Amino acid sequence: MENLIRVAIIEDDPRIRQLMQLIVDGSPGFYCHQVFEDCESAIPALEKNSPHLLLLDVDLPKMSGIEGISLIKKVAPNMNIVMLTVHEDDETVFDALCAGAVGYLIKGLPPDQLLLYLKEAHAGGSPMSSVIARKVVRHFHGGQNNPLSPRETEVLQLLCLGENYKTIAEKLFVSSNTIKAHIKKIYSKLHVNSRAEAVAKAIQKRIVR
Amino acid sequence: MENLIRVAIIEDDPRIRQLMQLIVDGSPGFYCHQVFEDCESAIPALEKNSPHLLLLDVDLPKMSGIEGISLIKKVAPNMNIVMLTVHEDDETVFDALCAGAVGYLIKGLPPDQLLLYLKEAHAGGSPMSSVIARKVVRHFHGGQNNPLSPRETEVLQLLCLGENYKTIAEKLFVSSNTIKAHIKKIYSKLHVNSRAEAVAKAIQKRIVR
DNA sequence: AAAAAAACTACCCATATGGGGAATTGACGG
DNA sequence: CCGTCAATTCCCCATATGGGTAGTTTTTTT
Image (cartoon, rainbow over all chains, first blue to last red; front, side):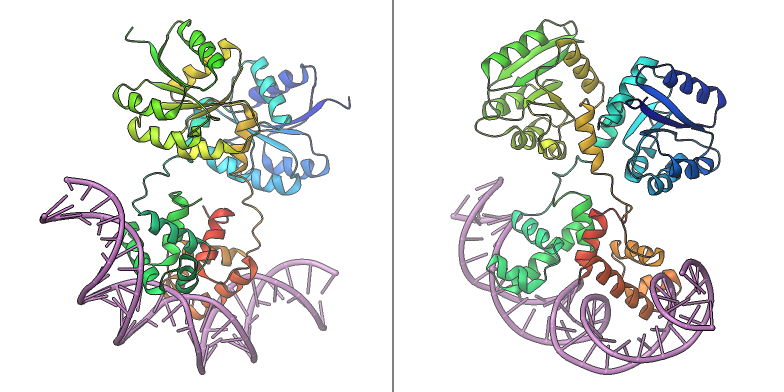
């Protein structure tokens, strides 16, 4: 009883909910601890007695699964949340991951596959299909297309650290007028007209770390 | 011959290289197109005749696999690059993904598992172990710990869009003095003293999207 | 060798910014 | 009922910033 992985499920469709519960409960090593049909009722219960793993439906009637994650994380920060979805091609993956989910799985996986994924999630992994993974990976791509010269990139990096004309000039052993010129060029190339915008673009376009 | 997935391999260890080649060539649906022992010699060849998939060793003697990705992407932008590593726990995952790799696999996978992953990569997926995936997912986490009040967060978001006191004030229907006061508070809470730093922290700590 | 791009320097000027201090209002919790 | 905090408004002031214009020198590309 002590070594079992305690699992909770939040799923509005009664058929799927009961099916999941059966799969989890009927598997060695797992124990279906709690079952809910919405986040509202789940949150107080999860606060009292939190399981190791939570299977959370993305599409819920009242509060969506995504909104639920943030609230659930507040009451049970150490629980691993695995999202369940019908559409492999939805764009909520990022919101879910940002909110604190660790995995993102499709409903209707073969039971043995599902259980394998749940073991991985409990062991510190992030189970997701490779199609989902590619969505995530794409967010890291696209850092090459930077229109800036090497020197400008260097200046922009220091800009992102909050340095001003003078301190950047000192670090690069040039006049602060030069830095100003570089920054003007950076602004025109990035189509911005303030530090804040430049820094935002630099980080989002991954021109800097 | 036309429907085969053309694969190239860059791997310095002759044993592993030949083993990989054997696995790929001996599998229906795959065709080992080119084999190299370093990026330097691979790049000119990949430019001429690029395969669908490239298996790229992370640890190469001269130019590292990570450095290689950027250069290879320049000559063959549409090729899917899958990294191969011995250590599942290295931190180069992010560099590799940022540089343009689509997958990250461990050396020594069972051949059938490897081939399954390669099919996924070719089909637009991002194969990686769930341990690697968790590393990636962790980069999306941690957006909750924001010490700012709701209003301050709102102001910070507009700050990241490059707005100034006046325009923010107009959008929020308050005086620009108020915005200034909010921004002062934001700076003290985030321990910064300029817009640039505030924006950088906001994005990196995921206080804003 | 010529042209183009990158790097560097300088000066003027209007305005935005950051730091300091001070005060009022409303809401929430002990 | 009182303290705290968020939200709001206002003032002053030194300095940083962004825009414009105008150069020279070096490096790279053609």
